[in-house]
Image (cartoon, rainbow, N blue to C red):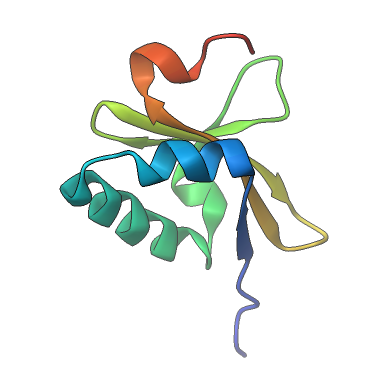
Length: 88
């Protein structure tokens, strides 16, 4: 039986932040996201008191919402750990 893969969509803010990252970081993030399309919950951690999940890639974080019924990973923020949690 083939597993249904999740689709990934980027908010404009998250995509803009992602596009400004160094190329080697972009590659690491992309590889991690490729693995998430099959089972996003094995790679991410739910933020306490929030509907968002966090994906850790070294000092960088991707904050996202995961739609179980819709099979969509909606990326809301991307950036350095020290900045990405601001104004949540």
